[in-house]
Each structure stands twice: as C-alpha cells, then as structure tokens.
Image (tube, rainbow, N blue to C red):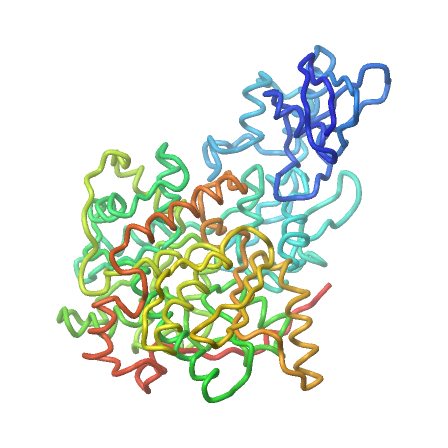
Length: 581
C-alpha cells in the first residue's frame, strides 16, 4: 500500500494507483476531459495538472502513479487559472451552439465551463471546417465539435480493436477521422457506438429517428408495434432520475402507449425464440457433427466485425438472427395473422441499447425482409426514446405499470439476461441441458459465465457431457481467441471449445452505444444486477418453458430448425472487404 497526502488529506491506496484515483478516494475532484476509467490514461487535455510539494515539476494526475510520501496540491489559485485558461482555449475550438446539441446538459466541457465560470471567450474562435459524416446511417461525426481529447480513437483502437478512427495530422491540425479522411462507412467501423458513449462532448452521436416514429404514429393507415430490448429496462430510468439497474419495464410499456403506440411487445420474447433456434442448432452440431465451435450471432457489432476481420470463421457463427430481427419477422407473420392486421400496415419499431441495430435492419438484404415486408422498420436507441417520452410531458418515474401485449410479449428469465455479457450463454445452457437430458437444471444460475472479466472460459457438465465454453465482451478482447480458432481451423485441428458468446461492447448490451451517457464499470454492474434480479423474480427461467413460445411452435413454426423457422429466423453471412490497419 502507498501512503500520501492529497490537498492536506492523508490517503492510503494500492501500489499502481494514480494520483487522480488517490484524490478521488480522498473525496477530491480533479477536473478531466480526456480521462475515462475504461481507457488507458492519455494525458492530452492537461486539466488534471497538479503540484507536488518539494518539486517544481507540474504533474498530470491521470497518468502519474502515486508514490510513498507524496504531498499533492490539487487546487490553488495558480492551478485554477491554468485550468480556466485550458478550458477557454478548448472552447475556442468548439462551437457555442449548446442548445442545438444532442449532449446539451450532459456535456462534460459544458459542465466544467459552468464550474470554472467561463462566460467570455478571450481567444480567437478556430472551428474545424470538415463537414458532418452521416455515411453509416447510424453514427454522426461532427468535426466542428471535436476537442481532440482522443477518447474516441482510444476506445475504437484499444477497447474495440476496430481501428475505424485514428489521429490524422499534427498539432493544431490534428483530427480524429477514418484513415485518409474516408467516410466512416468505408472504414472498418462496426457501428457499436462506443465512440459516442465515450465522447465527452457532442462530436459523435447517433442519427436521430424520433421524427419518423411520430410520423408513423400520426398515420391512420399504420399500426405501430414496438419491441423493447432486455437492456433498455434497466437503463432508461437513469434519464429520469432513477438509479442505474432499476427495473422500469412496465413503466416503459405505459409510457409508449401514452405517446401513441398501438401495441407493445418485448424483445425478450425474441430472445427466448433465439435460444430455441440457436440452442437446438448447437445441440444438432454436438450430436451430429459440424463446424465447431459454434459462436453466437445476436450482436450486430460482432457480426459486422466477423464479416470484416474474420471471414474464415463465418461458418462458425450461428445462423440464428438476433432477437430483434426474429421478433420483427414474427410480428409481421404470426402476429399479423392472429391479429388480422395486414403486415403491409404494420410499422415495426425496436427500442434498442445499440446503435449497430440501426443498420442491422437492412444489412442482410432479403433476410431482413423474410416476412415479405421489411421485418423491422425503425430502431430508436434508449436515449432517443427517453427524449421522446420527455417531450410528451410524461412523469416517467411516477407512471403506473402495465403489461406487454399478447402473444409475443411474454418472456422468461432467460430472455431478460440476454442483455448482459454471459447471459446468452447462460440462457442457452439452460435450454441445451433440457434438450440433451429431457430434465430441467436443478439450479438455472450458471455462475462461471458471469462477471466482467474480459474473457471467461470453463466447462459445463450436462449429464456427463462436458460442453467447453468461452465468453468474450469488448471486441478488443476477442482477437487472441479468434486467432487461435482460425489457426486451429487452418491446420485441421479440433478446437478446445464448443460454444462461444461474443458481445461487441464491454458488459454486453447493458453498456451498448445507445444507452444513457456516463457508463463505467460501476454502472455496468448495477445494470447487470438489475437484469439478474429480473431473472430471479421470473416464474419461468428457461426459454423452452415460455408458454407463448411453445404455442408459436405448435401453431406456426412446427419445431426448432424447421423449414419455416429457417426462412423466418435464420440468416447468412458474407465477407465485407475493408481496409485494415
């Protein structure tokens, strides 16, 4: 342990702790813009400068390790003036059109400017002249607002291993952009949106599609049906003052109805359906042989990454569509028939924690229209639907609770844990156990797949049969594992794994690119706990136990992996050429 004094307060911290972290433990806030707990300290903004007694050297708290006996001065008049000047210089390269910014009132630069009383601009305004990049259909890059903190580059390269963004130019001319200033859609971008959630200002944000939803609601010819992803229910409350992880499912159902939605369904039903198809696909491979290991396919960011970086492994991916796409196909076929509403008049909307979902609804051509119409017409993120709810004057935290509509709103605990890393694996094991043995698991909680370790590996005993599993979250953590599978495959060697779950974002969907801002591991854990609590409270906790899923198969699909199920619920993958770093 290290003992030091921060602003006169004695503090004890573990060796390797930075001065910034030590100050926070002492209850002292040192301002930062480039720092984020998910990322390696970068020290680019200079706001965290501090003094050390007995030394003339100015240190940057975010990247300086604490040392025994240090006496750190974090706040005095000189440091105040330095930080204020840094803020003024930063703001000279950033527009002051805060009212028009999607991050108004949630901008870290705006908050610091208020705290430091910056009310005038003493420096010449020098805004970037590059145009906005809307090429992906999901993410917008606005160079004019970029403050060159470097977070987006760090998260794209370090945390995600995608390398869609990089530093271009030097000094005052530095920009954060795809290589050669190509459009983002021509880069390796997987639309995961982690650049959005880590940007301290509004230089990167999701394309807003709330107007399209309101137009559909106002159209008397359209019946608007909405599905809600598992992770949304434990995050949307944060936009209305609730704690991270608080389960707001039934309040959200009510809010959607009050803004004019006709039918409210739940993507958790689609998650249960995904487990039936993906799980029985795995069982078929285990029993009858086939390309192994099997890798999950419910995360569009991961699928995009695989098509660009690992085309050799595309036949390892499950052919099962994501829960959102399955739900959309069933909405415009099975539910259309049962309700008597022509599928041409159904406007299918998905509320998702993910920006990649915005492009998934068109990514696989005819497979995105397996119903004969576009299966999902529109995707809104958690942030977008929260803004829409607020604009309708609804007091979200005090709304009454209502239920989802039948028959594709019922779900099990297995469906709800899809939103967290390890959840798809756990849900699949619960049903795979039943499929192999005909018996239910005595304890449905598979603890070895839980937690925020970047890569988790283990064996699950299914009545004497060992299923070797791995769980990965954050694309940057997947490379070593995928390289080994690729190497074994090329050499004709059998893999030492049977089933792998991969999620593009750290923590899984609970920390997706469309979730409320301010996500760190503490928030991830709270949202995760919310989903596990929802699972624990469920009467039925395995996907195959869902009565509405059972009826769907008996009345419409026949059985898992049937011809009709393959047509509606499965897809194909293809290599996507892209430049690579």
